[in-house]
Image (cartoon, rainbow, N blue to C red; front, side, top):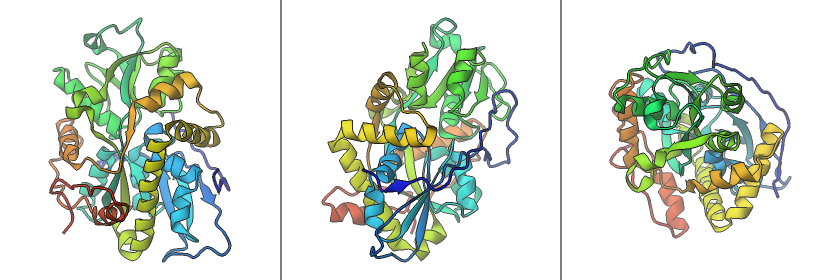
Length: 368
């Protein structure tokens, strides 16, 4: 199966349910969960322009392109002798920190942290270079305490991290109900409790939260604990499609190593193709990757419904990005951004064209 082998593991668990998280104006957190692994390559494999490429992603099924791509060796195959060094993170703001610190070169990440990272650096640090997934986000609640959407008012609802994609989506939904919440503290008509996805199920079981707006597989873990899906975020979007996972790159890395970036994108496209052609094998591969990262595979009652709710695709669904940016503005986490230049889809479209696939559009937000 995979040529990947863990070399070292460094885990930092930050439980932020009890106290408000102190963040910079960017909304970035420092609670990364860094599970590093480096892939093995054949001794005679030809290197590209870099000895290694450092990639980041989450141990979430919404990042299955990266999970499966590494697990099955599909990314490494395209990189030849250029080694992959992979690290995982709990949520996007932490991954943006790693990108800015040059700890990673390319990352799979949600749209809100990508927007923040782009705008706070004046458009200098990163580019979105591809899509990966849509869907896979749900509001799951304790049915004994919350029986309708109106009942969410006054309850404690978890999101993964202040400023991450699910946090912004939930804050926007709260505002649409006419309720008030202070974005940074999470206090107000609903208590928004920022909690690491790893500990959210335990927080739910203990009763310290009444529900959570979270990505898969955390959502289905809560359902397995007796939670009820009150809302699927896909139902809030036209055609039930919205970007949940993008691929981003440091601009200097793209400039210095375009061949490496193109190889990673080619591996991502081929991984998505393999996932969609072999859904059961891909689901098992993603589960094995999660087991290696967490020490425990997901049971069928968790992974089966979770997997069905996610669509894996190469299109970054750029037209939904402005909407998600508007949500962050409304929440008070972001000033109205100028997103012109946030995308560079030329390398991806080159790969797609070579593979005989349709090119994708940047919705007028592409780099010159």
